[in-house]
Length: 126
Image (tube, rainbow, N blue to C red):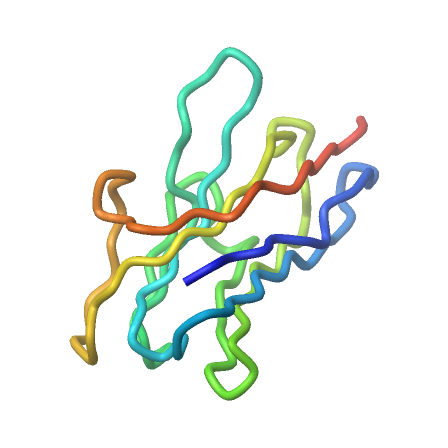
């Protein structure tokens, strides 16, 4: 499956952005999806994850209550709604997919993901 992330940009602190991840090549419904981010000089970290159905989700502590992950299997899309953005949220954001079949599983480790999008830059100014 091929992934294309989009929706990044420059936003002021306290603002919002919605990232999209468009999948192609295979039915998206058989894959769990994760959103990761990587700031300059830092490791790539999990931000949020969602199982194939959208019923089970995971959030890193630093985004709980601010970010929401969702998906639209009919449209082969996943989303990351980001609210109350902070300067420390500045990073390149990546979407990733892991083949899970129809298990209600999400994944939080980088090595659990099979496919990656190219990343989209999010910059939050203070």
